[in-house]
Length: 247
Ligand SMILES: [Zn+2]
Image 1 (cartoon, rainbow, N blue to C red):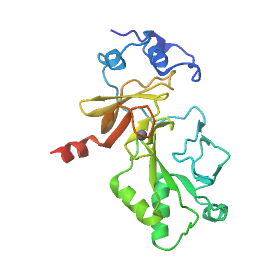
Image 2: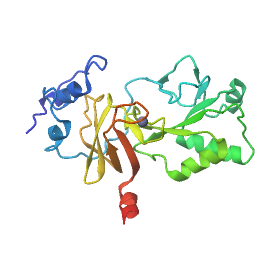
Image 3: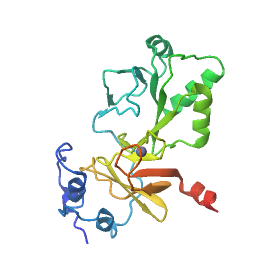
Image 4: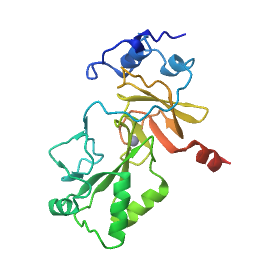
C-alpha cells in the first residue's frame, strides 16, 4: 500500500526540473523511476471531482498551428507569444481593428460570437486560420454540435484545449484532429470502469490523485502522426451519455 505522508507536507515541486514520473513519485511518496504508472495507481481508490480552484499562475499559450500571425486571445491567464494579444471578450471593436487570423476563446464566448456572426451582427473577415476553443473538465467539453456551429459561422478549423479543475491546460487537440493530446507534464490520465480519472502533477499542496471526471474517454497511448508523443484522449463525453451511445 501507499504511504501518503508526502501529501501532508508543505512545499511545491519545482515544475521545470522534474520528469513527469518523478513528480508522480513525489505525489505518491514513491521514488521508483521506470515503474509502470498504471500499476502504481491500481490500489488507489478514485476520489470525487475536486472543487474548482485557483490556478497557480499563467501558462504558456500553445497555439496548434505555427502559421498563426496574429492570435487574439479572449481569455486571461496565458503568457503570450509575440504573435498574440489579449482582449476582453466583449471588446469586439478592438478585436476587429487588430485583424487577427486566429482566435483563442472560451467555448461559451466562441458560441456567442458564432451566433452573432450567423445573425449578421459580428464580422471578422481576417479570421482565416483557426479558432482554439477553451473548455473545462468541470463544465462542458466540446460536443459535435458546438463544432458544427463554429464551423458554420467561421469556416476555419476548430481546436479544443481542455482545462482542469485548476484552470491549467490538461489536453490540447491534435493538429490532425486525432483526439486531444494530454499535457503530460500536468496530468496523468487513467481509464477505470470507462471513466476518465485524472492525477494532477501540478497540485502538490492539495493533491488531485485519481479524481473522477464524470467523463468517459478512450485513451490512445501510441504515437500520433502529428509528431506529438503524449497519449490522446478521444471520444470524451459524459459517462451516462457515453453509455447510451454504446447501447
Ligand atoms: Zn496528434
